[in-house]
Amino acid sequence: MSLNAAPSWEFSSASGRDNYEKALEDYPGQAIVDLAALKGNMEEMVRRVGESGSGAQVMGVVKADAYGHGLIPAALAALAGGATWLGTAQPREALRLRREGIGPDRCRILTWIYNVDKAPLDDLIRADIDLAVGSLHIVDRVGEAARRVGVPARVHVKVDTGFGRNGFTPQSFDSALDVLGPLAAEGTLDVVGLFSHLAVADMPDVPDFVASTDAQIACFEDFDRRMTDAGMKPRIRHLANTAATLNRPEIHYELTRPGIALYGYEPDPSMGRSADYGLTPAMTLQAQLSTVKDLEAGHGISYGRTYLTSADTSTAIMPLGYADGIHRSASGFDAQGSTGTTHRGGPVRLMTKQGPRLVRVSGRVCMDQCILDLEGKASTMGVQEGDTVVLFGPGRGEGFCEPTADDWARAAGTISYEIFTCLRNRIPRLYLHVPEVINPEDMHLLDPASIL
Ligand SMILES: *Cc1c(COP(=O)(O)O)cnc(C)c1O
Image (cartoon, rainbow, N blue to C red; front, side):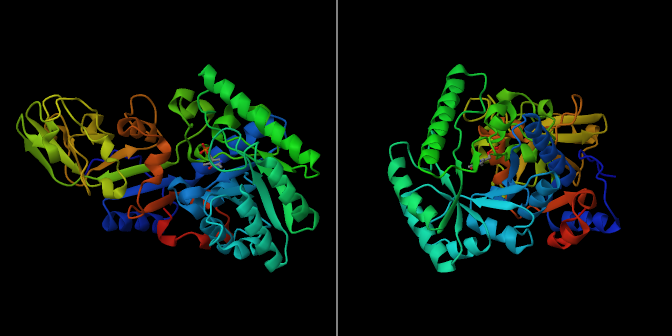
């Protein structure tokens, strides 16, 4: 009987259980995504936006394969939770959503990053996908495509209010309006919206950052005025990411664009825990242990000997590595190791006969595996090869020792966003609570083998 540090998963049917068993045969690690959590997180964002009284709609940002959670399942869960827009950075993902059956009758889709000389603009316009336009060159190309297709292109004017990324600057905006005006007047472009992105809304406790967000908002409103004065009053203004959707209700305008909240995380741990916002992390990453063995004190662990066992102990192989997207920066060093410095490796929830324990990546993360110092005898703990461990999950309760992606982000010196989006697709994605969230007529859009 192997020990299991993961929750006992609720399978929707016997075939769900079979799919789980097959996934375990296929690969020693699995990313299990709870669609009910995704839907509930979107409902929570929609509820909050409703409370602000703005009447704003909510876009589920599903770029980068829905932050690694799987584009189609996450998009359907977002729609089930009340999103009326979906957003992808890359046009390919926007087109895929439309192609797989999420038509214009179901939601609007906005896409915002492309090499405009090569992107399939005609297909995007035909698929009724809204396009971000943030440079004169992009406006020209989108205008040409709209003429070719014979349908007005729906565009959102992207402006740089201080982020320093895409969009027209205040200085370049007059020339943008000069070009946009005639294209709108002749019906080549349907200038739907105005949008921008915030740089520091995720740190509402830092006064300088609050002032900086205030300045971005003032700048945005100035752009809005200039468009209105030029006869192109934007119908849909949007500025709020997750952070601003949560803590700046006054700037919900007509649409907000939360991403990370959909997946159950707050944008920055300094904002508190996701549970404080009624959000539930949707993904659990688990793995089945490979070799478990005893080692004597002073034994080097992994490349570079950055970690030496401090006592007689047991180790276990956790068979996911940097080729799976486990950050090498989440390696563990101890003071006896070759660097002479201590760095706490990524945390892993391990089940023992005595209850759950947190152990850590010890030594360097390898390509396909990491080593865990169990800090004790595996035989005493009852830990064996094949036991299931959890790298991160929803972070259930205090005594549970369940890490979240925020804990991995801390260990790796990054943010939760990068923890998910780096997970490679060789790790199977499996979905919980599918029948509760996905309409029967959409069920065929999911890979049947992915349904638990
Ligand atoms: C990624 C992204 C978002 C969502 O940001 P979160 O911090 O995940 O809420 C919103 N808007 C744009 C333009 C983005 O690129």
